[in-house]
Image (cartoon, rainbow, N blue to C red):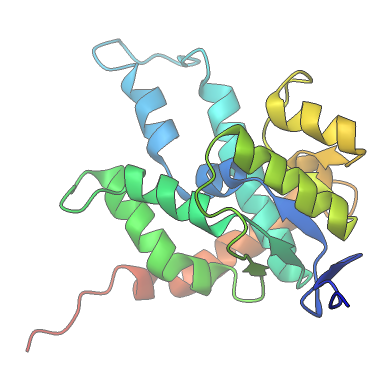
Length: 213
């Protein structure tokens, strides 16, 4: 006789889960590499009022909406599911050992310290289901988990014909952007204020130098 499944509607191994998060959302919210590279396109050009890159507004919007999503999740104590193996693989590629460039240093500090200080009440869980998966296989796994759990899938992908949205449509999974997940339940100004206040309270802990032995 088969054992009971550890997954049922909004429950994963007995824990309440309210959403599945695409890896790109977490990367864009916590890692400045895309923004850094985008602004690098302005190198050598005169910076005047209104000067921007082609994708500058989009990159800033994704980073902002992702950070405010994390603020909303921690404020409401919402537990989420994500692909741990894929996230760590992408982070390892973006944060190579020995790289001392600003984006790498920021991402390293954020991953090891800032996340716990800024979003202490947000918890996200994973399993080994995505081990060995890459690309579209990861997208399909996210859709499968959202379908099994009966929860929305949060992604930054906005193209209707994108791989993850096509897979979600076939499975009947509701797909939302980070902003769509929180916009009807919280005010952007309130989320921003709370996040910035917590950053200011904890900023000295992030950049404090270790004591010399």
